[in-house]
Amino acid sequence: MPQSVLTPADLAGFIAAHGIAAEIVPMTVETPTVPAAAAALGVAPAQIIKSLLFIIRDASVLVIASGETLVDRGVLAARYGVGKKQIKLADAETVLRLTGYPAGGVPPFGHPAPLPTLLDRAVLAWDTIYGGGGDDRTLLRIAPGELERVTGAEWIGLRLRSAVGPWRSTRDTGS
Image 1: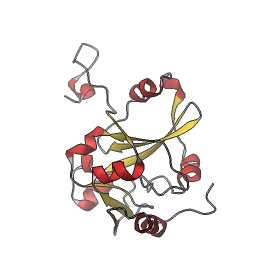
Image 2: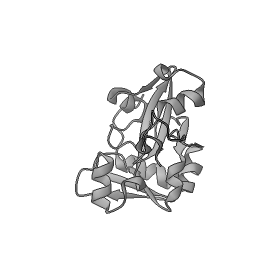
Image 3: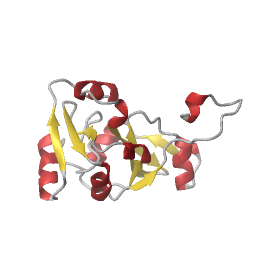
Image 4: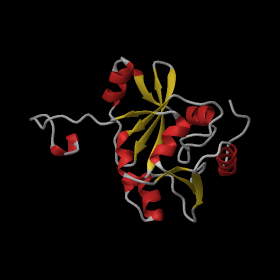
């Protein structure tokens, strides 16, 4: 458990200490949500990543998703061989305790202890992506391949894509 809340300066130190090809991007406005971050940067929401902490059967898993991806708990349940009811989004207190950063600014790495990480394949559509930089006024710029290298993440399709049927609309399938 971290002794204090980590900051963008802590993240910058982690980046420098580990030779990570990433950049801290200070913002003049708050960017705690995907739409706010995309608007502030002038990029597509899909170019923003969100670092979401899930508790799966009492174990923590960091899910790094494209800003436009609604994480399908069924995909996580299938990946870990559990029922969807065993997949819980961590509350703000748990996020702070396990990542060291407040919700709304959680970076994909630089936590007190490494977390098992899943990385949304949708981010591969971009050369550069932006994520939490340690607080709600700071972002992180990084390439998807570098993010994979640093986190040791497993690539995963986070949305179920199936044929359109009477129970699904084209919006549900991402078509």
